[in-house]
Image (cartoon, rainbow, N blue to C red; front, top):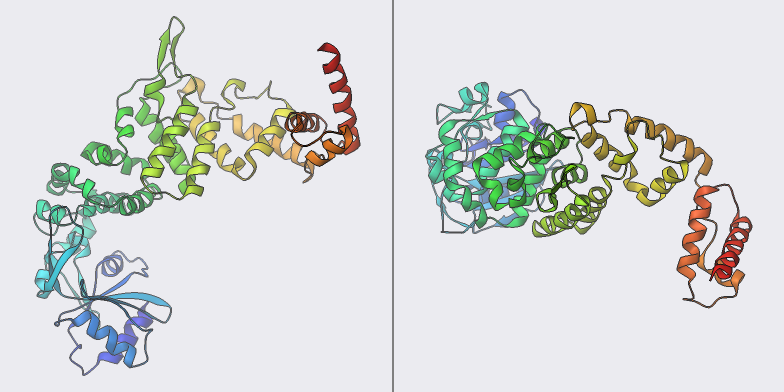
Length: 454
């Protein structure tokens, strides 16, 4: 990215853009933090400066043709493979319940104070790489790991409610703390998150979940009241007590499972929502508290939640499949003593490409239970069994098709073909080395016995 900066600096030397062109935002923040960044935003302190500079660079043959957004006074182009955004210094006014600002020319100082947080308010002159800290708080806040609104939090969040989610996201991505007045501003304005599109909320939620501290991010969303307007079902988990298998309430258990999962959005969504319908399935009798079939109810509820947040269908399908199956091994204990090889092979074929994610989810769930019930060895033991069974199967698939059954039994399409094919599958799971002839022979014997019993 330094190469791109040099290209721009050389191009604008001895033009009106010289010393009026600055890098702003995340790139400068990351430079202070001694981190690499590919996020380059250029602000130009001239009327219509962003668009004019982008067009100037294109005419010089330095960049791609700019994509221009006249309403916002911005332009995007590519230099040496890097996408860059150019804007003029501006001040914005957001209409009620709108994410679309009215943009007018502003001074560099006005531009800085309309930005979200002091850590993102630093600017760097393209010509000499000198950094300016106009708020006088940006550099100190970065060093102290503090997220602070550039001006009055109410104004900052009312203008763009998405900034509340960005504050939480930055906190968990960078390991920063949201300072008190900014946090109070989030709490006061939490309901305004309803004015943001579900797609933009989804995108910030994904970044929070894929951060090093996803549990901390969700906890902040609950504590500030934002979660009530994103996934209210999660709020219902807070303080909801469980049974003897747990030493945490439903929310804290779910957050520990979330923190225990690898950095994968399907897995982390599954972890967050795996017990989402537990409050609705709670029953109690002389034997204690139960949550019968909560995994089925949770999968259905997760589907509605993720649809509402506009997640892709493929993601929703995978998440629901994992949630639906996350209780599948609970009854077999740490050693899986009564979990047969047939059951292992059935698990392999039914889960297919979701097998590894399911094992990760179950393990994360297991080790998040109370100490006497956390089954730390269950998944390691199962993985050994899976490896052994995969060697036996050796990539084979069920050698019998519906057409084979129709020809062998002289049946027409639809006459119990599905039922007999299910039998073939069960036989093959017990005898994975059998060929088509052996399986069909076993089915015929079983069918004859079934008919005699009738």
